Length: 430
Length: 150
Image 1: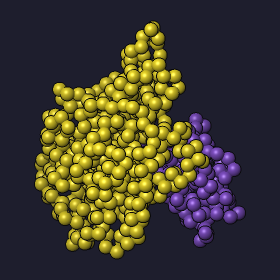
Image 2: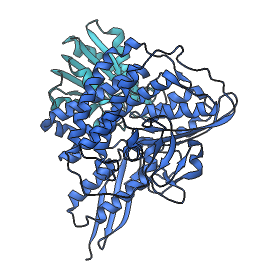
Image 3: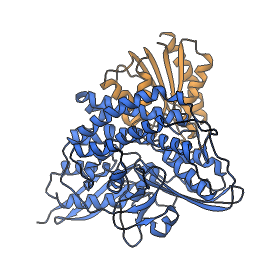
Image 4: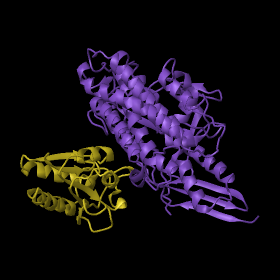
């Protein structure tokens, strides 16, 4: 069989940012797979140098409009690591709460607006809304409640301004949660329905023996804290990230590829968190997972829409738990004494683990910054999935194969804007 | 319900702030019966804001290839917004998607006017290009005129 085929998608739809896909098949074999990211680099790490540590949460929040909380959280935890400060009690709980808000916002956007049209056979959510009004409206309601959490704690729903090193600028009173609580309860019921709906979609038969990497905490499903672990024996603290992971430049992408040294590609995000932390989900989330037929292991990336739905349910459940136990702390933040040091942190962005590293001087001025977003970490795995997926379906009609390749990328909810980095690169455009 | 004007943009991306600047100008001159808001362009927030308004005006910077400062006026209750037109931001669910999704769900205001101001410079930084600055003044006047009829 001497057949040559090229799959090219010059502008990927329904992903955050600008990217393209290139797959070359020759003689029935996949010869080349490239996920191209041509969004120009944004130099965030370079312009953090020389800035005061207290500006970091507000500057890094600008890296992404979808997951600003993740950037703020990794930034403040890294700074607190450098200054040997530990935020605990209700302030820590409020950080988990605002993270719940972001997971709900981000997962709802991806599930309903970006991913669902793939499964239901529509070009986009607008077309889908005409036939599946209820599903789209449910997505919008769920997302709105996530927005409300982030607005309440962050001051506004995008690029929040209330997070600081040591805590918050202002914390809510208990009564501020009354209206939100009611919406969260309704949202939690809808989120259960949503897991059931997602589980009824049909999924391509596809699995891979990934190395899943996520945080793992002693007793919580991970947001802000935990050891970096994998299903293949990795167990390190964020301080050891640079010893075990390395970012590589590849010529076809403006985003660096992050790999495990000596081991290669790995997967971060909902699927990794779920596989490594099933036992840390709330009883309700675990029970719902079992009800829809999930086991503790899920290796099909197309099913990430169920896992995201399940994580969204968990976020509603966890937000309610935090609100019910909330007592207003005496002070909105801890006092910070800058010192010359390097701080490291990983937190779990909706799309996966997000690493920050800052070296600061004794006046709290940043000398050097390093940021590794989840999409950089998943790029190599996405290309691996594409290779495997196309290899098993070489004979599929080109238009269908192209669509399913795009879906393979969207399984990861890639945030291309976040992933573009500061390296000097030749800009590749098609 | 009051008539609504929303200026959309990112203050720190040069000409992208055009919509916000129009909102600020209109706020100074607008009568009481008009609500003026600023937004960053997140789709679901826009949809929520539009839900109850009898008349709404959205203003955003665009990059369609026209000359800097060119003004596009679309009666969006009547005609669809070109999705690519408003894609200055990399967000997958922005202004055009919000308006079109609201249309699909029958949630559009009876009267919705969208102004696009053609930007030139979207780099990080503060301040509008001179042509865009002029267009901001003109759009503010046009929007006030539109709102007289509401």
